[in-house]
Image 1 (tube, rainbow over the protein chains, first blue to last red):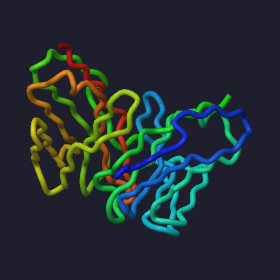
Image 2 (tube, each protein chain N blue to C red; image 1 turned 120 degrees about the horizontal axis):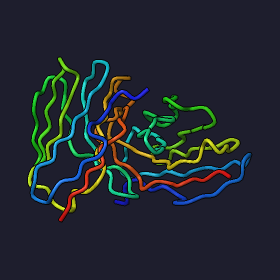
Image 3 (cartoon, rainbow over the protein chains, first blue to last red; image 1 turned 90 degrees about the vertical axis):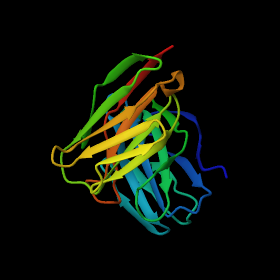
Amino acid sequence: NAGVTQTPKFQVLKTGQSMTLQCAQDMNHEYMSWYRQDPGMGLRLIHYSVGAGITDQGEVPNGYNVSRSTTEDFPLRLLSAAPSQTSVYFCASSYGQTNEKLFFGSGTQLSVL
Amino acid sequence: SQQGEEDPQALSIQEGENATMNCSYKTSINNLQWYRQNSGRGLVHLILIRSNEREKHSGRLRVTLDTSKKSSSLLITASRAADTASYFCATDAGGNEKLTFGTGTRLTIIP
């Protein structure tokens, strides 16, 4: 099993550009989530999903969209990138519909200029 | 605002010593989890303790939970260089669908 796979690992965007961060898991996990990690602020929840077709907002959802058309994939879309979205983004999944024992991807480091 | 706050923010100890880090939270929880993050990597789940448990062990890890004080501690015994990492506590105070992380303790083990 590959676990949780995130692509790309690094990305540089210009202000106003849009892009999609990909996340896929091969563990048949129902729960998937996106976090951003900023220095001194820990991880903050952006969006999460408890199953295909179901998504909900986390703590910092503004500027991001998600969809969950399959159990395996949970892409995160930046609609119009802003410098404030410069961060490291982590996708995580867990068995069942709860967030117990999250499995994390290796992260995407995003810079918005 | 952060639900969990770790203390200390940074800790350096000699290899072989024990490391203790603490987590305080603000509202009632169902469970509390500890994760480790090595530099440049994703987080790895270490241990989960439920609100009706007071202590839990996993290898060299010992976690305690005091719900009356809204605090938890993580003890790593006989530390090794490989334990150098950041450690985060996470709580489900927002419901079992939202896991809230603290700001972490950066642990450095000196060989």
